[in-house]
Length: 275
Image 1: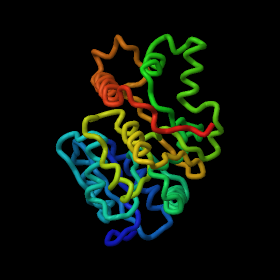
Image 2 (image 1 turned 60 degrees about the horizontal axis):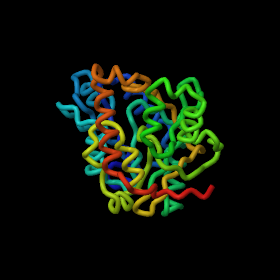
Image 3 (image 1 turned 90 degrees about the vertical axis):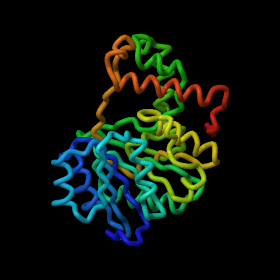
């Protein structure tokens, strides 16, 4: 690891889970093969046990604790502002990388300058495939995924289309957007596109960012030859609309949905698919 003049900056967003963060950091130290990288951990609502772990067990890692909850977007933006590398690997703390996965993404991004964001294949910890690339949301997709309508045949067809279920997920493909839990981009591309939109405190920041990369003529790629494990915590998912008023995460999700659709009202999808 080279924190003075790194080529790759690994930016990890963390929130109140030192055990999970430890697994993430240990996987990076074991499985990132290039020497020219740095790790930055940005933590929201920092508690004493996590701060002590970072100070005693990972003192070589750049650590940015915060008293308040900055949200995923706030941590990512701050990480980019502090990063020294030419490329940024953005990870949630619940990611455990497999051997060479970071190196594989970096090599592809370096050799394909038209690609602005690249995401790996994500796996559950039992090794089962996890959907991590998607088409852009429509109001109907939101409705189908949150109500009983999603069980109907016509709705399932639209959801499958949203999930790229008709595609081979063992092959690379350009997609509308990739999950922000694990994505890589470059300093040059971010310099053109800008940081994540602070309008979105929680949810849809990754969707919006990928859309802006497409608007700026950068591709967004799903690249399954790089694989990572992801403990997918679904704080607001799979709940009915009637429960929204009683769940803060769900309310945040709905607010971001409304902001997203308002921002892109009347605008066409900037990603024109070849097939």
